[in-house]
Structures are given as structure tokens and as C-alpha cells.
Image (cartoon, rainbow, N blue to C red; front, side, top):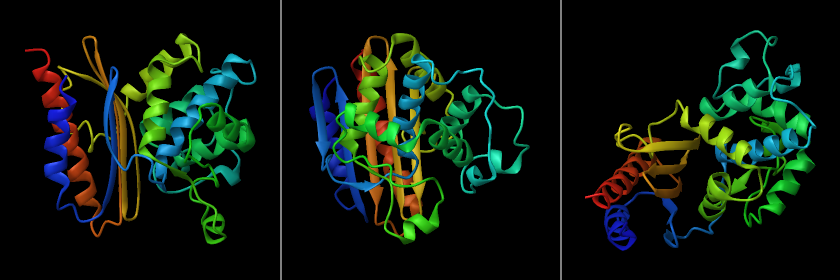
Length: 262
């Protein structure tokens, strides 16, 4: 796969982008990037290291996939997700992990942060050597935001997480495959996967969005070729500008992957 050709396409397309953009695209032993170490508000990308810590605790027997999830009133959060509109009973830890990723459920995320412990998630972030990733607050915690606490990450850290999920040693193969299966069920696919043919490539993704910012990250696979991609944008007057540029980058990745099989 020709990443240099891909970079030319991307750089030409983003030259007039009306906002801040950062990306890293990694495949085999090569990568391309633009400002990949720049820090952004993480939005829901922070849920990637959270699910990694979740499966680490499952491996250690600290919690179980079939364990009943105890959702407290303090966990309830608006924004993305469905749990805030449903009954709080009858869900398992596996349900919480799945909903946190595939519909970016903020209530599920808060429940998991509380159960796992924020310090344990911090330790996983450190163990993965994520340079710019910070979990500073619960989802939709506007009081914490007002006090200066927030969640942060960068494109480089997100690609590190994706590589670790796909082929790393931080988790067992069984846990890594389980996370990928969850990410492949992603329902929010208006960015990197939007212009990819799902019959030709497999996409396991997690995106994020807050006012003025749009992000996406994905493991994209075709045959024995795998691409890890993260694109972060902010300072947007229109979030649609961010969604559009990320989906176009996804299209370029897809086109180059398809060319490598001709």
C-alpha cells in the first residue's frame, strides 16, 4: 500500500480546511501524519483506553462479562447513548462495554469508570505510554469542565491504542478479538467508514464529537493489509466540515487499499 500517494491526496484536500486537523495513518512498518502529537479534547475517543482497561480487569477476574451492571443515578448522562432513556436494570458488564462503543453511551461509560476506578484507567493510559491522553472527568460532567478538568488525547495515542488492540501484548488475544468484534458493530459510521464498501473492507471504529470538534479512529482490514487511522479536528464553525473531511480521508484510505490488491 502506497502511503506516500495517500499523503499527497490528503494534504491536497485539507489545504483549505477551515479548522484545525491532525491525523496519523499507520500500516505495516510505515506511517504518515500531520501534527499527530497535538493535543485535542478527546470527546468519546477516551472510551478506547476505557474499554482496554475494562478487558484487563476482566482478565484479572476483577469483573465479569456476564456480571449484572449496577447503574446509579449519578451515572446517568445525556448526550450520546440510550441508557438514560431506558430502565436501569437487566444489563450486564458486556452490555455496558458494547453500548459504550457502538452507540457511544455516556451512561454506560460513567458506570464503567466508577466501577473500574479512574486511577486504574490512568494506570492503563500510562502502561500504554499514551503521551497526551488524559481522563480528567466523567462524561457530561459540566461542573468538572467548569473547574478546568477535561479529557484529552492525540492522533498518535489513538493509533497506539488501535495497534495494541489489533496485535499488541497488553491484552490477551481473546480480549483483543472481543474488543474488535464490538468495534465492528459500530453504529456511528458517518466519518472514516462512510465512503468505504463494507463488502470489501472490515472496519472496527470509534468516533467522537463535541461542539466544534469531530474525530474518528479505525482499524481497517482487507486480506492481510491492515491500516490504523485516527483523524482529529476542532475549531470548526460547522461540525459538518469535520465529518466531511474525515469521511473523505476515509475514502482515500479505502481507494489506496483497493489499489494494493489490483
